Every structure is written in structure tokens, then in C-alpha cells.
Image 1 (cartoon, helix red, strand yellow):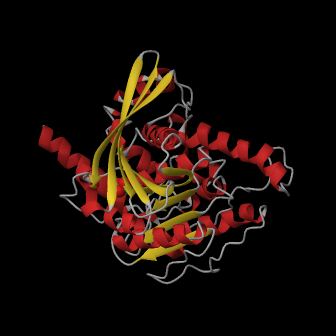
Image 2: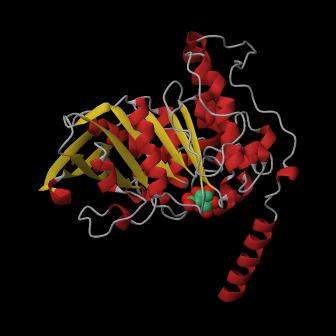
Amino acid sequence: MKSFLTALTCVLVFAHAEAQNYDESKVPAYTLPQILKTEDGKAVKNRKAWEETRRPEILRLFENNVYGQLPQTYDSISYAVTEASKTAMDGRATLKEVVIKVFKNKKPVTINLTLFVPKQAKNPVAAFVLINNRGKDNTDPARKTKSEFWPAEMVIDSGYAIAAFHVSDLAPDDKDNFMTGVLQLYPEQLTTDNGMRAIGAWAWGASRVMDYFETDKDIDSKKVTVVGHSRGGKASLWAAAQDERFAMCVTNCSGNTGAALARRQFGERISRINTTFPHWFSNNYKKFMDQENQLPVDQHMLIALIAPRPIYATNASKDLWADPTGTFLALKAAEQTYGLYNLKSNLPTKPPGINEPIYKSIIAYHNREGEHDMTLFDWGNFVKFANYHFKK
Ligand code: GTR
């Protein structure tokens, strides 16, 4: 019986995957919701109208229809910092192991942060923090295992601090257990259709790490870049959109409900993501399965929420599932918001070639050759992007 069900599931998933479109000529005609028009139809012509009216409206729309609320009140937060090594990476870095504990209604959640700070740089230093959605061995504090997914040595040698925490501390990435982390502090979220789910929980965790950075004298908390890959990249976007303390955002191969436009219906679609990962987004998001055009937002508006801060989105050439063209078009459609701050992106009008990063730009983009992953090529460009914007 079990194997029959497994076989049936495989057939259904396969049938669904087959229905995905990878043919540009089959992208339907669509009209994106306007970023710079308020819900009562007024044109948003300046920063004031954007910040006071339209930005909060769009934030609410994403909360209510996509990611769910992000509760920000808690009873206490504490940080236990262990300087695990002053001579990490052959003396080039200090390793700190930070245990962040947050309490609400006597329930705790614990976030374990691994942080390397370069010795050479003048403190405080700018930092990258990764929302790690892959194996913990990718961010090995002992550096016995080294991974391109988090190339800590390269980042340290470039003069930046680098940190990581694992998504499972906030919400295990599993539909039956995702509620055993931070959602225990906010159980009411589980009973509302616009309640926080796993992606929101991970973004919430990034903000608690930012709370910590504000207390660490080695870190320049005004220069923190939140980084995420794929599902982690959806969370890094949502974290940066919500929490303006993040100076920059990197979203790597984030695709559907990340940086790619939903209305193109190319690669992964809302129906598929909600079916495979029912624990990622709010209940309300399920209303938009096969109804992309009914969404009051599209992902260009999430990018707009990050303005005027720099944003870097990437894709990989063989990762059509994450829709490289749809990502580029979302970035282009967000440019108008940066225009309100007199900031002009240097993105070309058409997607750049493969392995042609555009990082000297307030809105940055590249499409790396290869598979769905985050590599040394990607990180090397994130560092150049940070160098450019932090004017090193
Ligand atoms: C896929 C999912 C994508 C992306 C990816 C990942 O299965 O469809 O949205 O999140 O996983 O996280 O690597």
C-alpha cells in the first residue's frame, strides 16, 4: 500500500512538473500591479508619499496575502557570546559562537550564530549574514569542512565579517514540524490566515541576529548584508523588506515567491510551491494557486520595499525553475522606486549575458553559468558589490 502511494505521489508530482512552462513563447500576457499608485488610486510622486503611504500599503499586502505577519514584540532577548578562538583561520579571524535566546510568554527560542570577524580590518566591520537552509556542515565553525556555499575564508580575507545561522533553529523545514520553533512563542499566528509560517520565521530570525549585531562592537550594524539562497533567498528578501536595518540584501536563485515575477508563470508556480511546501507561506497565499493575476502584488513590489538600499539578485543558467528572465524583469520593474531617491540602476534594458555580473549598480544582477546553487563565483561578486556600495 505504502509503495503504491509513493508511486502515485511520484506520478502526480511528475505530472505537475511536466505542466510547468519553460517556453518563453508560452508566457501569458500580463499586467503588473502598479508600485507607484496607492490603493485609492493616487500617483506616488515622491519619497514622502512612498514612505508614508504606499510602502506601508505594500508591506501589508505582502503580509496579508503572501508571507504572513512578522510579530516583533518579545519579552526578553539575551546573547551569550563565546570567543571560541582568537586564532581562527590561521590567525586571520576571531571566531565567536553566539547563543541568542528570545523569550515570549515564558517560551524560549534559541538561535545559534557562528560569526567570524577579520583581524586585519579596522573595527567595526561590515558583515554578511547567511540564512542557512542547507546542511550545517556548510558553515562549519571548525573549518574542517569548507564549502563554496559559505566561503568564510574568502570573505574574511576581503575584510568582512561573516556569520550564519540555521533555519531549523527558527522553524524546521518540514510541514509537520515547522511550528516547533519560534511559532511556539506566537501560537496565535497558526490560527490566522495571515499568520507567520516558515519563511517568515526564518526572516524573523535574521532580525534577531541584527538585534545582536547592534550590541557587538566589532560589527558595523549599519553595514550588514542579509544573504540567502533559494528558499533562504525568499527569506532574505522578506527580512530586508521588513527590517530596514539591513543595509543590503542578496537573494541568490530565489525564484518563485522570491525575486521572480509570479505572473510570468514560468518555471515554478504558486500552485506547485504551495503544494510541495504548504508550511512556507500564509494560508491566504493558497488562494492564488493558478490565480497569479488575482494577486494584489507581484515580486517587483517586494524588491521595491528594499529601496533605497542596494539589492543583488542572481540566477543560474541551468536553473530555469527559478526563472532568470522573470527575476531580471522584477528588478527592472522596481527601478522606478529607486528613482524616487534619485538612484539610477545600471542594469541594461535586456538581461545581461551569462557570467556577466552587473554589481556596480544599486540594483545588481547576474546569471551564473551552471546549476541551482550558491558558489564562489556568486560570493566573489557579492563582495565586489559590497566594496562598491560601502566605498572601500
Ligand atoms: C525547490 C523549490 C524552490 C527552491 C528550492 C531550494 O524545491 O521549488 O522554490 O526554494 O527548492 O530551496 O533549493
